[in-house]
Length: 543
Image 1 (cartoon, rainbow, N blue to C red):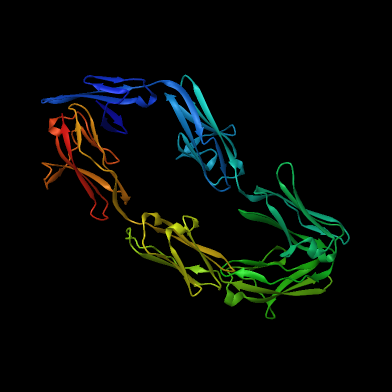
Image 2: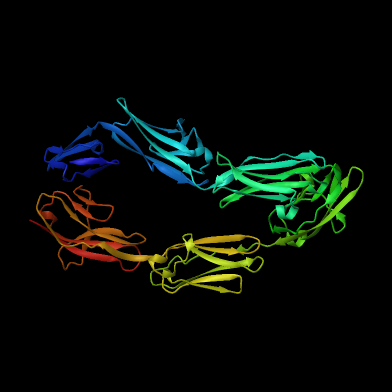
């Protein structure tokens, strides 16, 4: 007797439920897993015949979605598995918040390319957002009944999202004004306010300003800046910024106050080499007739790298410290011809540039190793941190961390073991940026016995399993051979063509309908190219 398993015929072995008895196959307590193609083969010295039977098992449908509750951070992925019992299964259908998630093509669904069916019973959501939260249901149907399971997706930590913002306004002196921003996020975001790029606090602007925030019943964080009586000096570009541990989001708009031109003092602007920077002109007064930018007494032309934005801001693309660092002068002209100027200092910081590093590909247990993380350019001082699999290096691994010259660091492995295998990340930080690089360390390990084979004796006509399992890296390959006697030096590979002898994926040897001809000596060998490998000879006796 044989059973179809993924297109291959596998011999039927006797179990507590399944009993092959010559021309009759008994299956006790039939379950849906027993459904499929069963084959009876009859043979003698003149040939063989086969008969196939398709067994269909009907059972009450049941569906369960796992995990039943997932708490996922914004941007991460979520996977739901619909475990189905019962038979037959005609269709599997998914709903999200009572709306269909129907497959379109190649697993993509009507909910979009972020929501995909990896199979009928596995739903995957990538880049989770607020719109993905809610209840997910798996419906299973046949022509007699329907079953359904459900699960909930909740958002964990999420990056802030602005829900409402303020607009540009034009006011007259002594008018009151209130600027509001609201945002969602988890953890709840904290708001910061800026005026022309400078941090705005009640302490810096006096008691005329009231700055605060609170959480409403919907869970939104609402922040405000209130000015009871505005002055010309209160004009400028106001920015609200909502931040939490995952990130930040900001909004900016001008507040224009009628009056003469006036320039606020401003701190030096810091830029990162190779990145874009926008410099705002810290002016107030309204109306104006124009804004100009100068450097070294010459008006800056508009070109591919230097552009002008709304409100007269200056944007420099891909900042070059040798060309762009220095003083910039912003000049604002009022409608009546009055002028206001302010010199702004731009400093450019160079981020670390890390050279890629690699571990030797031939490392075996017991070897020594060293890897160097070096910075080819970037402003000093530079601080270094090493991580293994995203976590600080465990002391138990006894890895030496050393630094040299302020611009490189290296790890020393006095004796590598399989426990050292993993991903190693070097993180370098300076005043401009943090950079990192990750390399894989794979330690090759010679085969080691998991289950060592032993001599066995069995009764004729039964089934036999001889265990032989090994571990190592790469995963060892198990080979079975047969010899003439215990002292034999010649072994021949086993022939699996007759279907009685099967090599299982874990390396164990299965022999069906054992007979006297199966008696003898068998050799199990485990090799992976590291070391000499393992081998063990066992005897098989048939009574």
